[in-house]
Length: 467
Image 1 (cartoon, rainbow, N blue to C red):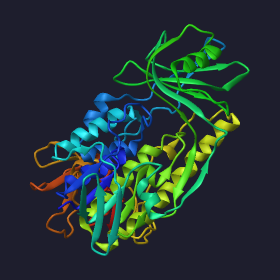
Image 2: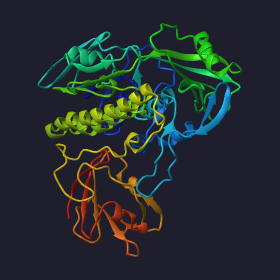
Image 3: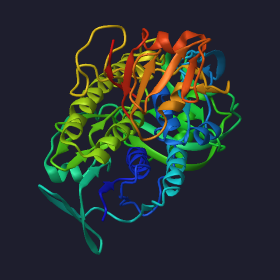
Image 4: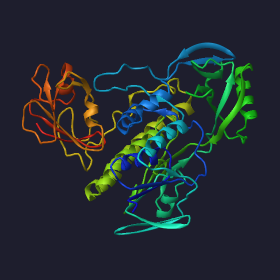
């Protein structure tokens, strides 16, 4: 018996499948494409996504395969006139271990996630489109090529053209702006330093140009150029001619492995759920690439939904849509505002701030977050902190949260549930199940007095606090 069927094997569907499989949920993940996607597309991973990947057991592989943001060389009229960073690199802090974005081509991220899923005995089923489905009070009957299966839940993680969303008749509200188009591709570029990204523009119009960003682990750059309304073929010849116009020649492109003409879709599904069927990722929200939010928001949809499907309680299932649809609306607003800056030629269009890192996303005021006062409240992201165990071994608080379970932290010597993790001030005598708060960072991060209890959800957000 399959408990959950996931349609779509991009980052959203894979994240959800891993989270379900590690909980012992019987899951199948089907993909209509005959082959796996090869290309960079969503190559920006935000700090919150790195935290999710740590919990799912893929962070080391992601960090080994990718790279931190690189400086951008500015070429105007064929001359290098300066360098800039899209976002200043921040140092890790006790509560934020991964403060910076990270770059890895989407196809390589998906490969790492597939490898992790395979460790649980689950493989992506390529060439397996979802042909139809119907649901009743007890489950969903889904039609796949050559078989009909019965599942408890169906999740549509099948992209912006989602079959699942369309079959449910759920409106995909928003716009497709045909006046803005981008020529994108993964291509090798002879003559460019791979320690930098490269921005090519004319001196009289420095904010309108072509960007080439090195892709980690492969000899290619991601190419991006504005098109306007003219019709062109996304070919190597087109990419080369566009670059020559702004660079004055001297950079030879070759080995184009992926290309597309992109139009900004800015859309939000009217609903994220219909009975036993859920929408996640691009099936629920379509983003412009400005700000690097789309893939990351989808990953967190899957991470939010996994533990709720595994539990199956009405309270948790009912919470998915209000929590995630609110986040998607907020993130779409951020991406759209950055897109407008590009359209206006604003000097700060390339700059990225805290609002794109997704560390400030939370669920205060949501159905699982009772009202409270104080600096830290239910619905907030649970911070990290350095600890030591009774043997003097360094432990991060995130390590206590890792895994599919909820966690209760007890600060100080107050009463505690049997499975709670107790954190004591530095210098305290520790039992085998206690942890020392190194530097006082855990007490500070959780605004804790002696005896405070903090209940943390499996997806790393605070569910409850006592005084």
